[in-house]
Amino acid sequence: MPERARIRIFDTTLRDGEQAPGFSMTAAEKVHMAEHLEELGADVIEAGFPISSDGDFTAVRAVAAAVRTSAVAGLARAVTGDIDRAWAALSAARRPRLHVFLATSDLHLEHKLRIDRATCLSRTRDAVAYARRHTADVEFSAEDATRSDLAFLCDVAAAAVEAGATTINLPDTVGYALPADITRMFTAVRARVGEAVTLSAHCHNDLGLAVANSIAAVQAGARQVECTINGIGERAGNAALEEFVMTLHVRREALPFDTNIVTTRLVPASQALAATVGIGVAPNKAVVGANAFAHESGIHQDGMLKHALTYEIMRPESVGAAGTRLVLGKHSGMRGLDARCRALGHRLDEVELERVYRQVTALADRSKMVSDDQLAAIVDGVQTRASRPRVTPASTSRQEAAWR
Ligand code: KIV
Ligand code: ZN
Image (cartoon, rainbow, N blue to C red; front, side, top):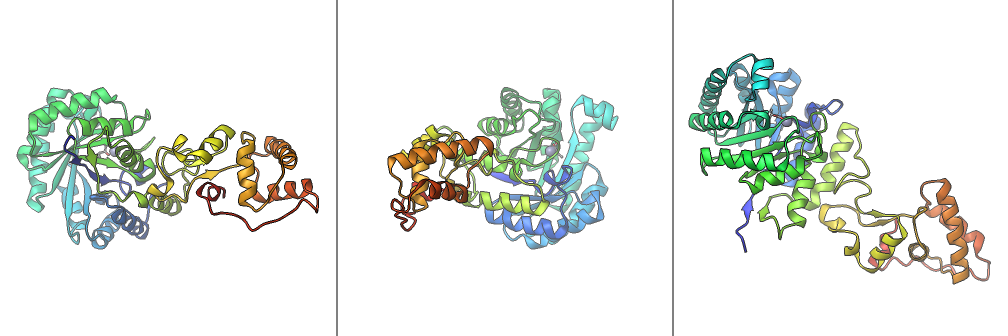
């Protein structure tokens, strides 16, 4: 059995997550979400970017005071004013972390920052050393790491470590990298900076690869992963915390990594975020979407009624979801319909079931789903008074409980 490594979860829902249009949060909302993140077991909660606004400074300060066990990080550009402001916002934190970032790709150096590589190196050293005067917990992020020259990126990472950074984050800022690129980058930086420093992944989802890239990163030596609830974040978002954590969980035989995340808190945290920002989760969202444990097709319902593992790779309870849902629609079959009728207390003979089935599929062709009330009305129309032995709903079996 390979030794299992512990992966730290750095949640950036309240910083990168809220940078997405429509997702900003007030101080009270950030504190509310921070409580969820702490219950979830996040190792680090990035509370915001204190220099960005007075409101965010106040919010980071409020989160820092409210959080008890997780570390609380504040973001700062590699300049003293940002670092001082972030440090002031973190003053009440029990475990403060300063998170300093500077871009390292030539594209960003030339066109955005208008500085050369030598200046980037010296700014990195100066900013990290300055942050270290405030705290021993300093993270340095090389923005746009995946599009940076790898030898130069290694130089910057080594300079940050020499100056006192304890975590080096290598972001795929624009979600451009393939898993093989991530493997190459982490392997090279690991070789350069050694084992003592924690390497961190921060992957954006522009090509839908954020979680796959985060997995590649831990396989190549990263021991911290930055992610967000529901995968929110700049543009297409960040790696979704719930997807990364459940991938490690479900595929634990292939991935020898553990986190501190209490998986049964995943759906509550997802729903709390959706309610807080007023933006719902797509029904087909992995792990926490409304359809993640819903089955409409007859073949799938039949499989599920026989054995849940036929079409579910994790139990809904393991992520805090209410349970499996078998939904009546145009793809549903006889067996699923029969189970639903039984769960509602209707006992139908074969001929009645066939008639109900025909009407249900006709209705489902017109309207997307058939509700319990609609089903009851159809059953009522089909059954004669004599053949209507209404019994108490039998919800004893787990399969029948799946119908809601
Ligand atoms: O995507 C990114 O590069 C970032 C850094 C500020 C860490 O969010
Ligand atoms: Zn980011």
